[in-house]
Length: 173
Image 1: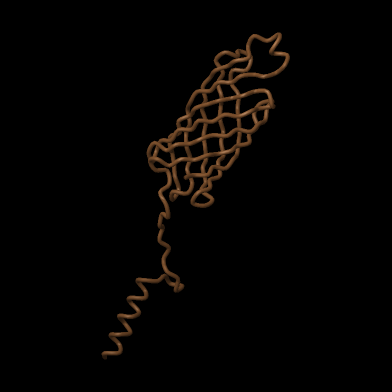
Image 2: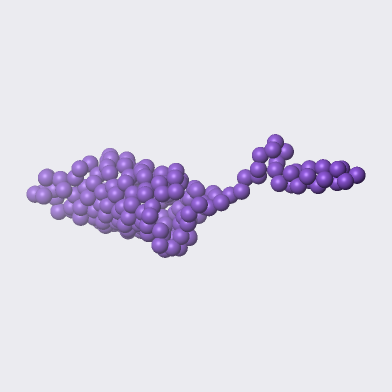
């Protein structure tokens, strides 16, 4: 009788502790604070847009768990310098490893083309920026960034709406 109680209690304990296949239940544990106040990041992106391609670099700062801002700049087609400041709002996250963000911000650009130095009066342009950003944590400190943006130009009437798709990596610290 005493052996049966021990066996029943042991089977009950093991049954509640382990799954049917003898493996422990998966427990999600966050290893380090992600998307928290004060989290910084440096990123490098390569992107393509309408008639252009180029490289950009940026700095990200997390205001809180939902909002973060990014200051970025880069060269497109080796003659267009673009600088933009965007604010990102977290729309969705999946177990603190994948984030979908909506972004809004402002941008400024300056064209360095030689023909524009002499004949073109419209070298400077300002505008707004809208888009979606997908962040996927590869490791604790490395993220894969996928970005789809729509720069809206205010001064250039020929090319008001544009698009930009880019992918890059961000190192957080």
